[in-house]
Amino acid sequence: MGLQVKTAWQRGILMAVGPLMLFAIWYVVNAQGWVTPRLLPSPVRTLQSIWTNMAGGGMGHDFWRTLVRTLQAFGIAAVAGVPLGIMIGANAKLYRSIEFLVDFFRSTPATAMFPLFMIIFGLGDFAKIAVAAFAAWLVILFNVAYGVMNARQTRLLAARVMGASRLRIFRDVLFYECLPQTFVGLRTAVSLALVVIVVAEMFIGADDGLGKRIIDSQITFDMPQLYGTILVSGVLGYGLNLFFLTLETRLVHWAGRS
Amino acid sequence: MNALAWFTPGTHITVRGLRKAFGGNPVYAGFDIDLPKGRIVSVFGPNGCGKSTFINMVAGLLPIDGGEILFEGKTIRETRIGYVFQNYREALFPWQRAIDNIHYPLKLMGIARPERERRIAELVAGFDLKFDLHRYPYELSGGQQQTVSIMRSLAIEPEVLFLDEPFSALDYEMTLIMRDQLQKVLVARGTTAVLVSHDLEEAIYLADKLLLLTRRPSRIAEFLDIPLARPRSPATLTDTEFVRIKAHALELFQTAVRGS
Image (cartoon, rainbow over all chains, first blue to last red; front, side, top):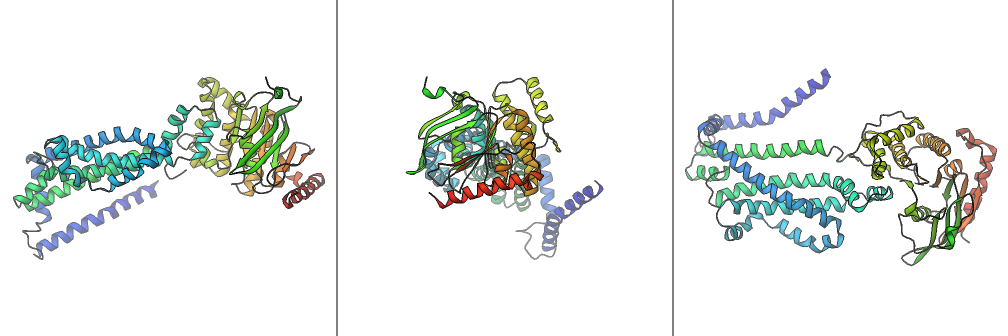
């Protein structure tokens, strides 16, 4: 036990080394004036900017708005993608017939769809959410279908020989079989939704959100705020990924072990 | 009613005129056999002769092209069967603990929890388990996983148990232990069992009757009685009678491999 705590502690220190080094190099480069401070503000000023923006500058609100939009887009994508993915995966002919379409649109940059979605849904919030949802939906659809297609045949056969009906096989076996791959899809989808939402906030007339703050910082040449908002966006993305990863290891404990 | 509703007393599985072809190549072309009730039958034969095809058809996992298979006059749908797969890793449900895996077939039958627990406790008593059933399958060794798999197939008290090379993925030491475990449970319960094995020693060791198949299209090369006393133990393997039966079966096997 003592040894474990020590190694966990050691791992914590090791993990902190990289970020601390980055800040140290950043500090030195800035202090020595190797890069003009107009392009690279000091890390202290950047952190200060995050602090003041969070405290009263509305950054908390922007963070929240971006998070909400991302989760809305993700939610729509998941609700529409998981059942359909299961259906497609369970039907080999259906899968083959739309495989190319899904692959094609999955490979199309979501940002290329912005103007189209603006025409269809207008300039409001929903256009942003819709385009992010569309991109995330394809990722979820593909992964769930893939998970279902690659379900272990022996397991389905085992359920059948035990007398499980088609519905029971679906609910008791197929659903769990595709869960690991579903989670891969969900995690990829939430990251993609965030990317699309942030870009959409920059270019599809948003009133708030981290993307809007980033573009405003660029226009006003507020470099500490620009750097600070980038870091905060990173925290949001990392946090979402970590959340899903934790959920995954808890819910899909057997993934990669069976 | 069809003619096959009649069956010889002591016979559990009646196979008549069984036909099966894969891509135009017949594997079974009019195959007949009677498998005895409450006995263990091992199926052995040359590679690719359709041993697994045979039990999969009898177990209803693989459609047949023609012929009839009846269990004391009943169809497979009317018969409670258990099936143990070779690949226990892919047969167990890794999202359920071992004990819940064993509960599952009983749950499918709509049996309430107290009754399920009673039956499983009885089942567990017949095995010498040296591991915790509240673990997940992936936390268990191969032998332990296959034990859980066998327990799951026996939980419903099947009339017939099918085993498709159940121990071929295990090491020799574990195989010896598992054979004895299986023998003990099957003999104690008097379950009819059909076992496919690619190991002649194992096929004879476990069987009351050894079904030797020819190359495809498969015919019966021989349907041997194995009159060795039970319980058999690893010492049986060096018993003169065992050695004699094995030598005889090997000779028949070699003839079967050479073809007709």
